[in-house]
Length: 145
Image (cartoon, rainbow, N blue to C red; front, side, top):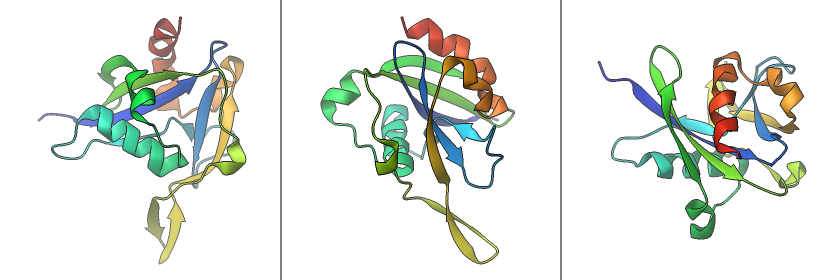
């Protein structure tokens, strides 16, 4: 059986700081993720990554931004999924107070946003990211030179 693919955009600066999205209901100290989500049928991985970034952060990429994405390849993620990582190098991060999530999940008859917070996570704080992502940092750092 072919694995599903999740597409992610890692927004990173030259010091290795990364924009983290906190998953609703996850532990505050370790529930961060990259803006990412599943690639839909007939959707290109890069299109899914850009869509997920917009849905989870309200950051819109223009064609200029998309052309600057670095394709870091497809890598094993978990038993059911692979992850296609795209890297976006930046000199500055957006104001975290302006970011918002527009996708929701339902639990107990209530709707909750998929993401409930944002943080710029330094290289020394990367343990705050979801444990499944821990083995992706060597890949990311190798492309962030």
